[in-house]
Length: 171
Image 1 (spheres, helix red, strand yellow):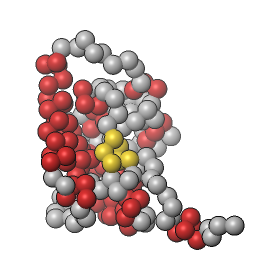
Image 2 (image 1 turned 180 degrees about the vertical axis):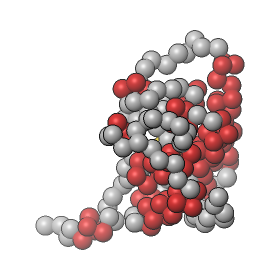
Image 3 (image 1 turned 90 degrees about the vertical axis):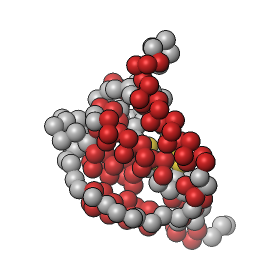
């Protein structure tokens, strides 16, 4: 028999798709306030909230798991189960902020296929489709640059993958 204490404490956990500890707090901070999209088709609409509220939720979520787990979580802005981040947030400047948080937050940034090309869709099923590989590059240039520049920043600065976390400011 093995000692189950490690499992109960979470020491043996690897990680998960971090909807509650990353996606939802970021979405509800940056979402289009006029959107009628609900959370993962559960009948619960997004309600915009403050940056302080979002940061408090992120701090609480990361504090609940061992640091090893926090740094292995898949932080996601969208997935096969959700609306697309472009549809949820809409505004280019706020998408820049969302992707900035994605690549600088402790964990593994996961980009759902097509998000780097500003794919849209309001439901999980409605957000799944074949990639349009023949689409003109110029059509997606801003989105591709957004992801490319920020992911290069993460790659080039080890503190973003190996370091700790400290909140400098929230608004």
